[in-house]
Image (cartoon, rainbow, N blue to C red; front, side, top):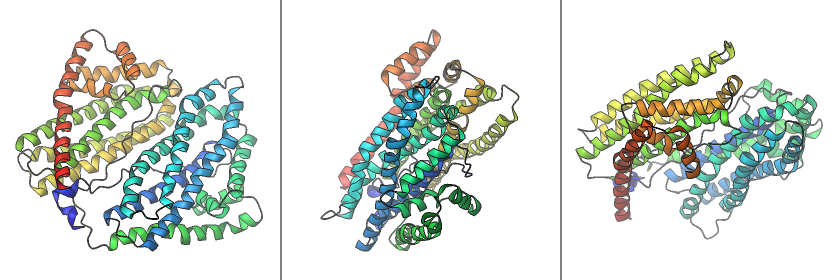
Length: 516
């Protein structure tokens, strides 16, 4: 791909933003309600990872793939599409009536509220969008490039939402529903799910998809023996798994091999794989235990999006000046300062909240996060040093080093935040009440206000996208002298911080427009 080496085409050459598709723990525990969701959701996570790899491969060889390879991809997609479609059909037929019944029981209102406020709106947006993705299978008279240029935006909108939906089921719905489920109820729900699959459109492939991602042979066999009905299906699972490997996963390997074998592909520092920095839902009364984390996390995610826009713009512009790079450094320094304040907020407010009761179970995750944070802080310092060098040198090697370091640490930071949102809310809920959400958010805001950088408070509040919610939040938290400091910081945010992103991005778009 010779064009990838030119600055004009660098903005077009890209890699998809991969959502966080980390597999969740699974032990084939017959009593675990969470594993009803995890077994199926992990199967989807593994498929999503393969999908992004294949689309990236096609993108990077400029869609120069054979018709046979494209037919292979269609066959792969058909299997995954049916699996996801039947997943939602099962939830509508079996899970939804169960949740509605629980909602009528004493104490079941929290399940109903979570269903109405969180699960159903997200599920509707996913099921409404799912048919649009099926045009992958209708390519007559359409070029491969045109097909994928239409498909990629839909993929990048749909699958991060699907991953978020899985998280809501596993870590939001499960603790609310568990008190109403007996051992027999959980066992029956698991059986209903596998029976639904085995009576579906592709019982062999879907049954294999459910469990092929389980790498531990003992757990795999345990799940099969506990779940698959005795008879032809349990005896045929080995055959199903082999079929999946030879007729489904082989397609992934083949398309990735096409990319590897292409002598034209030149991977340059401008080909960034932007992380999927989609914002997490904030402001639900049901998920109050997560909101104190989500608000500063979403602020970091917004800044991360902006930083990648800057890096992509830098890969396009030929006329960069020292002043441009000084503005980039100033922007990065503010972003890095916000991360620094967030890490301090963890130590002063968040972690003490979780460890306020002597509970050894809460100490281990905190130790793990501190270990990860230490590595991220070192990488951030290394990134800051590389950005500083670029204020006086803009040669390809120096700029490339800066991008490489930032493109290493930012996805690591995103993964760190995602893990916090999965693991820490349960401890916050255990040791606090809804007042804790206010206390954590208020503490983070005032640490921003008191910092040496007034822009930070505006960065935090920007993360609240709903204007009505934002106004209510500001009325509750921003008072007295804090209001003056926030207003000053917001003006600086618009005039300097955001202006840098906007200016560089608009210049890059003009270059791209001329090139086309």
